[in-house]
Length: 339
Ligand code: UDP
Ligand code: MG
Figure (cartoon, rainbow, N blue to C red):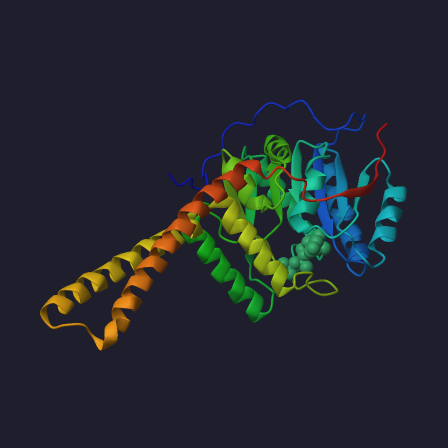
């Protein structure tokens, strides 16, 4: 049965014991930001994010931390992040990957180290403004365990906008995930969901979709969308296709099933052709030196082969789903203050 986005929140669950490394600082909110070659956007992000969160936490009497994962940046991002850690060592943590493992792996590595009870994830490029975070947090405080978002007036180029819309449509057709805008990464998660995602140790996944699967009371709200503050999109066409494949194969077996159905269909059609040619041979005689008979038999066999590969794929897909416990990233260094 398809899960729908909750309209009515449940009562807030009790605070769960924190599972991450021992530290005297246990903030209420953890902000997670993946970074790949963002030297131009980082200073603006830092200013606007800390201002928003400082104001918010002062008003609500809460505390927060920021976890940056540097996903193998080749520019000065690493140095800049280290300077933020030096500025606020109790509040900032920096995870340094030893290569580029992708945005979702960067978020996953941070999820394994969060200390807050509510975790907010956003991109570094300020396309989703940090000023929208209090809106997401206000929704979380109504009792939801996952607050997704969709872009209000998207500010990307036409190609990206339409390609994303198409991907959203395909994902909607082949999975039971209800999500208006899968590419919008400003989202908040409860600690329980984040712990569960970290425990699953997936090596190629799509965090918002996985969180949706695990959520008991998900919802989504519109958030503002701005053009990239600086630099260019870090997604090449290849990376976009890869992420889409991860999304499809992690959450659905429909692509494999389509393959199998296709095989059955081809076999069915060609068996009709075989029967027709057999009757024709008995009544009229052989067609042009039996060439078409040969084709018919060949197509029948190809159909059977497709069915066979499809069925094998079904099993392979299932085995893959349960056995992919490989780590999808490697950490070089972590800047954090634990006492
Ligand atoms: N990112 C990352 N690793 C990558 C690609 C992107 O950590 O391999 C980060 C990037 O720094 C940004 C976020 O993921 O914080 C989203 O990337 P981007 O804004 O380039 O994506 P787009 O908005 O074009 O989808
Ligand atoms: Mg962006």
